[in-house]
Amino acid sequence: MIMTMTWEEICDDPALRNLPYKIETNRLGQIVMSPARSRHGEYQAEIVLLLRQLLPAGRVIVECAVQTTDGVRVPDVAWSSPERRQPVIYTLAPEICVEVMSPHNDEREMVEKRALYFQAGALECWECAEDGRMTFYGVAGALGNGSELCPAIPVRVVI
Image (cartoon, rainbow, N blue to C red):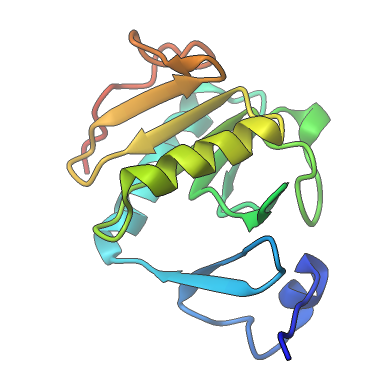
């Protein structure tokens, strides 16, 4: 028997509260966990600082839950306007969803995550490569000149 849980049940479960992994769910409601290296967190922190400085009118969220058509996905960093802010799970994605790449990520997975975030209402998806290079995407595809929502964000994050 496959056990499934709602996102709220997952958040409230004391056994899952202090796991050192990022938790997401698949379309069946099963928990999927991804371990992260310290460098991953360093890039997350730097992107948070940059977004907080460059887009102070909204909220920067680390590992915010986004309900998608394929379960709950958790971008490493997100930026949300006050109008989209939600207390438990974003049913309308934040405007910007950022994924920090890890060695186990592949392009197919990233294409799928971007599509899910865009279907959920994101306006831009960013990827931070393992060397800090940033790639920016809009609903129509790659944004060649950087972010349209945050033009001052650098094309390479330095830690």
